[in-house]
Image (cartoon, rainbow, N blue to C red; front, side, top):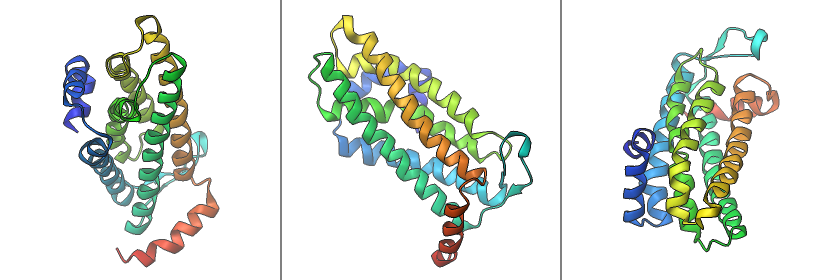
Amino acid sequence: MVRAILLIFEPVAAWNRILRAERRTAFILLAHLLPLLLLTSFCEGYGLVHWGKPRGVLREITQPKYFTHGEAVLFEAGQFLLSLAVVFVGAGMLRSVAETFCARNTYTDAFSVVAYGLSPLFLLRIADAAPQLSPWVSWTVGILLSIGALYHGVPRMMEPDPSHAFGLFVISSVVLVLISGMVRFVTWWYLAGRFTGLESVISDLAPRLHL
């Protein structure tokens, strides 16, 4: 969480520390990404149980739905896995894009950029605990902060040719915006009550967790 805050307010210094540390994928996953996602999942899950979330889309919004503990855990578990997928898939795509710019990077390089670069986006999910705040507000602010972090992170971590640095930054940012935006759409659509079949399955499974 501290690293995510530093990437927002002191991105240059934060990326320099990350570059010097030369952490491996497993360390970044276990020491940075998983704790951050668990924290934000807990905060949002707490809000879903205690404050609920309005149903519907735009003018169709109705009274909030209060989630049971089991429903909140299952929803957050799904979002947690989707978030991990965004990072792993995004890292793979970033490495592939870098190769088109003749950069020879390892998967760890790309994973570092994506895992740390998307930290502001994941951190802003804490705001999703607020019942009246649209999930798109936190996503928009978070992804813009992440793009700001990537602006400094991509050239430092991927070390492309200077003439290709900005192009690699733009393409990687667009890819991550699209992937994370699709995940946000899925979770927003579910919270709006549009996935009735999936919601029914989760409602049936939730009591079995005995929470």
